[in-house]
Image: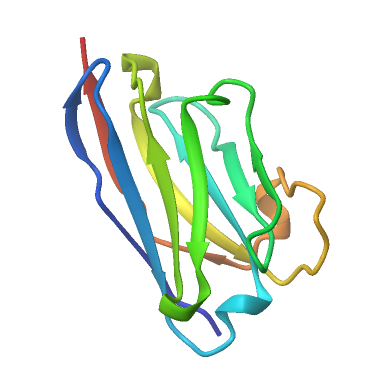
Length: 126
């Protein structure tokens, strides 16, 4: 069982930066591939990026590549999403999710994740 809690969202101007954190409970955090998703009003939840269990492989969606960076600290049971050069199109609720997966292929489908956080709102003003 894994419980996930996101933090770090807020209101930021276009061009600004935010860093989201996702804290996980339990002692098996390093057993999970971690993903970040986002969902804007009226849209489906979409994959933003993911990171392998030991952090050596990361994946990012094309829409955020070069602007968003994913990292993790297994000793702190935490995964991060650093977001730079934000635009109003990045406005959404951001979720972290955990999948019991030992590989390094990007997990882009929501159905493969067994655990989700409650989400944190990111609003980018123009």
